Length: 157
Image 1: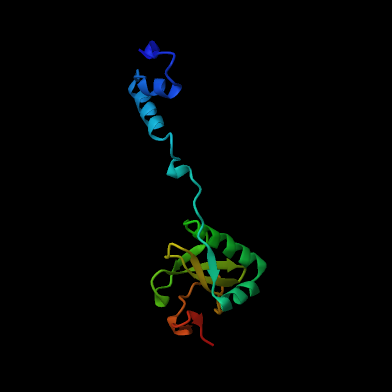
Image 2: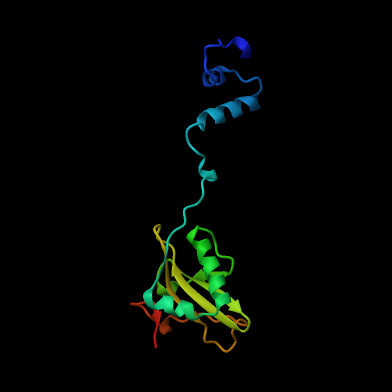
């Protein structure tokens, strides 16, 4: 049956006229005929969201130690790609829906980077600071909403 095609037909026509001999071959032929003109979504590279810093936050971020900036930058890049960060992270409900924080432990200190990524267009970094707890990375204490000005999402003081 496969040799019935005339020599004047193109390869595409012969491939489309071919009858599968096994069920698996039929699936392969069907799949190849469906995906000849468009790439599969799983093979496309993910589009990264742009990253925007609050103006005063960018200065605070640059004062963090270089290794903390590197960890935060790498994890923010993961967030931009729609992936979960590799460091400890969680929601900050006290600052509004979709506000998240990265928790970066470095030696005896803990650093926080507060961001919002729920919008489809971008990731917004609202704050970056060193946690002011005497226990540092050893113990975790919840960040209180009393220390934040709800209008600017920046620490008071």
